[in-house]
Figure 1 (cartoon, rainbow, N blue to C red):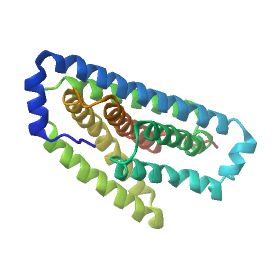
Figure 2: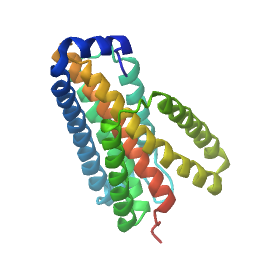
Figure 3: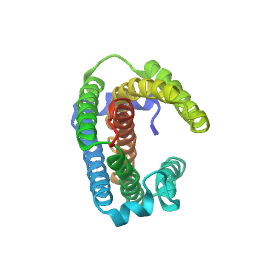
Length: 245
């Protein structure tokens, strides 16, 4: 995600001096604005589908995902890969369109969780995730400690979670699912602080690179934080959520 190496970031910081701080703040404000817009879009589609029996039946039959539901479940991964590997070739408007479409499809996929779990547990886990995300975001933005090494460890943990989750799709172990969720909460909590610090550094190096490139970086940064928050929320829901009877 970071198209600036550390030396270039340091050089930019030295050249622009006091201009870096407001540029970084403006960039971070844009990142969070796009993230909140995506979360709002996901929430809209989640509630829309969850409260419409006809729409819900098209993605979930009460026990399993339908064909359309399976597509909605895995399509977001395709959008993430497209935005990641096609970053240099995609324009800012296209990146924006892909990001918002990704958020809408994620909302459709997440609507199933609103049907499976009680409203109170969904709200409680969402509130908990919001508080944890907010605390770690502030920590990542304000700390002077370099979190790069910490981030590498978390990324290895994330890879481990992905592999374990794929394996458990075939095993169906409730205990393994619990362990994965517990580790996932720790990993995505830490990644929030790491990603915010990384984005702050990108914002400091974004001075003078052009509006199009800055917007692309902001969209991609919003995608990273969106994924941190959603995965943290889902891990908490898997741990503490109460299923409907």
